[in-house]
Image 1 (cartoon, helix red, strand yellow):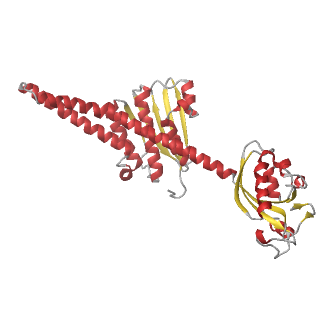
Image 2: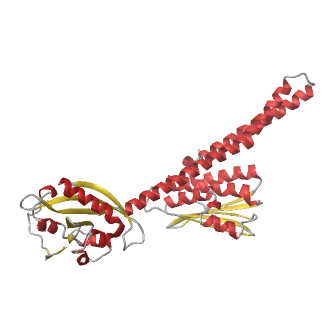
Image 3: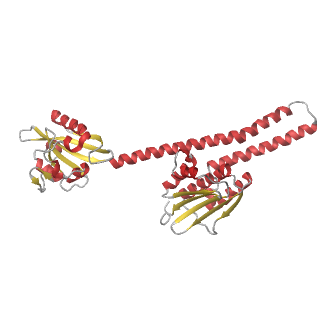
Length: 368
């Protein structure tokens, strides 16, 4: 511990609570070995009388360089917040707990954040002659909170995009079938030859069947009902068979025999990525065929979706790879799913088509 009198050693049994301390040296000694909690004592002019190594490291200045210097000389623009807290302690004689401080220090390039507690130190006549400060840095916690808010925002955007997509699919398919069915039923309510009525009834039955099929497709997209029962491998085969029938795109599936079940969160994530990838093939790639591979080794599992479509331009591919504004919420959603599992997403594209590779590390010994 650095102070104006030199290095202190901690005598046992001399520490007391901040609002009853009269021996400043025993308080300093208590914080001597604290590697993460900063501590300092300042006089009424804001000059450092003592400081421990932890707080000096936070300020980015050697401990000895603080002594005799003011708070303003050491920490720059942040000093105003600290000086205001010290003024309150000297004027009221009361502890000032959990004061949040934030800003840029002269020794740093990015803003930092701290939670600080200030308390009076009295002399033998009970007069407040100095004030102490205990500092805990929370910069990393603030950064994590900001990252969580950004993640929540991206997830909200992804959910909104899914809802818009469902609404669009309903409008483009089921709503059109219902409109056609309504017209047929209105015609059936009018006089007409028997052959015409039979024709309209046949068309109406076909429209109802299409509505049922499309509703079932959208329901499966929202939650694959057989994934929990059949596992990822068989659910992938079943889904791709239905995709081939609906889209007219030839699908080849390469999944090794004896493919083992995976933890549910991994299976759901990979299945959603498969859905997103083949949907993109259908909508954008103008492909005639698509190949899907699913394989694993001792450390990871990979899903590969490769099409023979038109591919993406280098500019568009760059947008997707860096998740820029043009990258699309769908790709961002895939990345977020993989990031939660410690996985990666790789996209390669050119004149011969596009390949999407999702890789997830396998948990150790059956982790969920």
